[in-house]
Image (cartoon, rainbow, N blue to C red; front, top):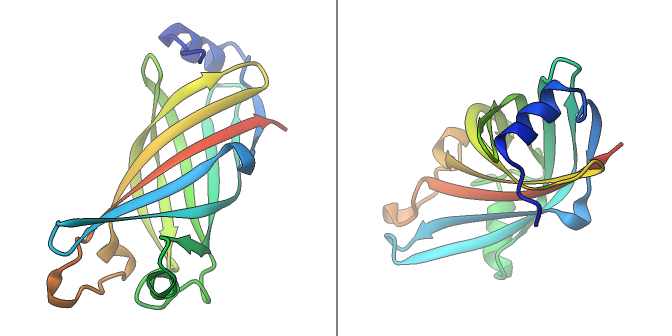
Length: 181
């Protein structure tokens, strides 16, 4: 794996090497989530299908982007639980079939990291987020980023938790491969 160094990230953004449009390649990307259940004794894990996305790098090195997830594709390996996660108690997938991560700015913060600011929308509710995207691989034609996003699901109206057995904290991990458009 080609791990970039700080000058590579900074110089690619500053020298015009990365300028242009980049498109998410769903086949080379993945989205997973996890949340504690049964008062922390069990971790529920699942996946969401990535629908698409794009990154734009401006001539000034400014980075913006979006990644779209299919809320109807929630898969934890348990059909009844998946149906419940798609319901109005959680993703409201019939009304809001997509969850969207929008990046309004991304700046180098480490040799292989971009500090990102933007918003996350799920169940029709949008909230501001900050996170670090780590560059796993980069070439002239493709870049692979990973990011972990911690959200308080109650901020998205996802408060179902009988006897408070489910954590309000959920962690999403995204691996996104973008290629030049």
